[in-house]
Image (cartoon, rainbow, N blue to C red; front, side, top):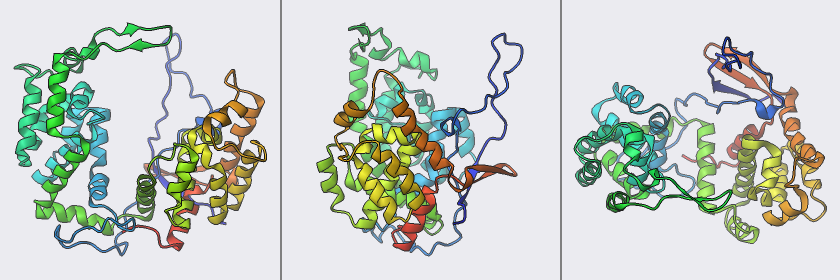
Length: 409
């Protein structure tokens, strides 16, 4: 079977740690295992035309079916980089990034970045985080987008900080109760300082503004009100590549099944409402996410490990025979009657006092996955890297989804 080739966006300059005496950088240490290799997220170019139907106007309503790509997902796909930019690089870099856009596209990018950095407590989280330094930029975007109600509430929230809004994160956090010292409960537990009057006032405005689902609807309404902007977003439906469409499908299935970390009987019941191909893709994607993050050992240790027998069956369904053989060796390490309950499985097999030979044996299966197809090989191509070989999980999932006509449009 031919090796699967993926394009990666990659910084090719190595990062060198400073030496202990500070005179010169230490040479980069070779990784001890494949788990120490930082593998960037794969990226492929957009399709010229994937054959998906493009709506003609917002009046052509969405069906809500799993086979349909939600319009919000298209907005997310186009603007995710701006949300991440604010989080990682701050408001100045974000402002520079959106400067070339037209007025409506710039407003959308900033509104999305605000939404993305809301956190669990909406405006309260935003202002408490470093992203809150972009508040003046966001206030202007709300006004230009015509979101009058949201603009007025946001303006009131900024006014809580006084006449001169503090752009400095450290100065801003002094207003919050959490800036005060925590109370020590015991050797390992502390209790945060209580919320103060400022916190409660900001929480009230957060509730009026609306949390992420409410603000998301306001953003979609804004896009729907701008025909050219709406069309530019909707047209992306026909340009999404297959890996992106597969990712959208698995995310949608995750949402439909809901909590996959609960008691297995509940998970099994929710999975039963999905078709066999959907279940197979979903459980393999669960394994793949854990595998990418921490390898085979992490999958079996975490609550997702309750799905292990389902993952093995799904690998066979996807014709991942080599991967299934490796996975089965891990499954067999847990005895003939596999324990679905996470806490019971941990108590029976994982020694919390240290890393045992059993742990090492289970963890070593990760390297066996990466050794498939001759192992990973890297090929420089201008400013990117081609990575060849390896587990082949994404390739198998994509091939199966294509064969079963599951890729959404």
